[in-house]
Image: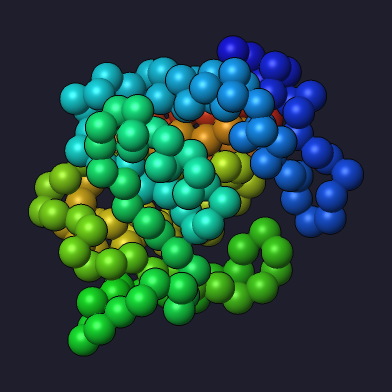
Length: 175
């Protein structure tokens, strides 16, 4: 499907960012979104799917079930339960909200040389994705693809398009 198909269901009257949760409310639209997010990938091209924080748990879980594949949760700092240094924390960064943040991942989530697709809802800058890639690569995983509903193509994200096979249903070209 083209982005316009999804765009009419996205609430743009919200503060700070668009609300994509209406896409989850209609089973047909949701099923099409799942299909479109993984359309370019052969199910043998990767071992696991990684997703950023809470909103996309819905997507990750559905994709993991549909494709019978593991998913990795990358959360904001202090959201994952941990014991004895079991969680790896990213550097601090400022994201689209202009607040300092940090991400974390369970160290046991990634095995050496596993091929991983990262899924995020919207990529305007590369701050959160960059830290997610770093977490996965620090655990010796290999990020083979990034997929998203919408990505801005600009000086910050150009690296993702060129080096991490960024697939987006919609690309906003700012170059």
